[in-house]
Every structure is written in structure tokens, then in C-alpha cells.
Amino acid sequence: MQSVEFPYVEEESKVFNKVKRPKISIDFLSKVDGEWLTLDDVLADTGADVSMLPRYIGELAVGDITTGKYVEIKGIEPSAMLSAFIHELKARIKDKEFELPVAIADSNDVPSVLGRIKGLDIFDANFIRGDKIKISW
Amino acid sequence: MEPKYEYQIAIDGNVVWKGLNPKEKYAEIKKKNPGKRISLAWKSKYDILVLVCKV
Image (cartoon, rainbow over all chains, first blue to last red; front, side, top):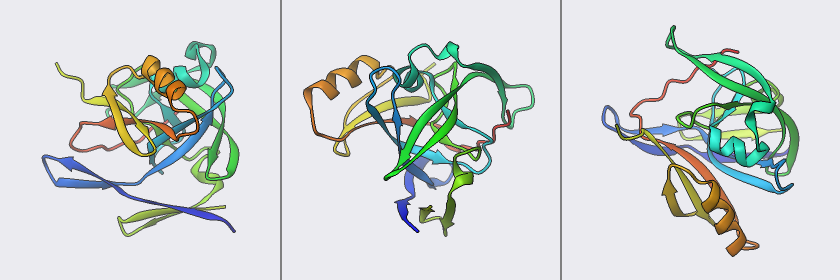
């Protein structure tokens, strides 16, 4: 079994002073130029059904994001709905390549997220004591 | 109102650019730095992130 570890990323918070978040690096094969696009600080989020990218990163990956299947994504806020377009992208973590459905948001105020469907679900993901995440396959 | 996020571009892990639209800058930096690890990141300025998404 192969694995890779990512230390949690410490970020500032006015409420808690510092917050450590499980963020990882993922490469996406761009459909625009056929080259790998490396993303850092992708939040590993078991609460997310699907992986997500903000609009401008999505445009670097696929060009016209509106060619994907339109979806409305719901979060915690009951009345808030995020418009997005689902695209199938080739993704890579270390040397593990996989096909990943990604909701590219029609907004830039959205983090890069690795969600469960065909993402975290195909790995053993171990969140270790708020310190690091170990992803195995 | 100031946006609560920014994009960052790094070369070999060192952030060289921050801003709201990375598209042109990413292409430019990538072209000028062949063989180096060019990465993009979206950074939050929110104090607390609670993310759940249902499709």
C-alpha cells in the first residue's frame, strides 16, 4: 500500500487565534493545455459530497465551465444555494491518478475542496489528531 | 467590501503572487519558470470555515 502525508495548515483566526486545517496538494490535468495544474491547500472535507473548485481555477482546468452539468449545491445556510457545473477531471495525488467529478463553482468565493464522491472515498484517509492527514491507496 | 479570499501562486513552494484573478499571471509565471513546481492556491480570509456540501 502506498501513502502520502500532508501536515495540517495553520491559519489565522480572530476567534481561535490559529486554526489548523487538513489541506492537501492535488494535480489536475488541464483540458485547456493538456498540462498538469498543481493545486495546494485543497481542503480534505468528509462533509462534502463532491469535490469543488473556485471559478478561476476551474477555468484554467476546463476553459468554459458552463459546458458541464449544472448543479445547485447546498451548504449549511438553508437559504443559500451555490451554482456550479460538474466536470470529470483527471486528478493525481502523488503518483495515484484517478477520475474525479468536480463541481466548478460560478463564484470565486469558494475554496478548493476534495470531497467524498470518487475522491476521499477511494482512499484510506486518516485524519491524525489535528496534526496531519495520511492518504493511502 | 473587501473580498474574503485571495488566490496565491507559488514557485517551488514560495508564494510569488497574491491577488483576485490568477489566470494571466499563472500562465506568465509558468512560461518563465520551466521545470519548476508552479502551484495555485485559494486562501480564505474567513475566521472559521464550516463546509458541508450536498448535491
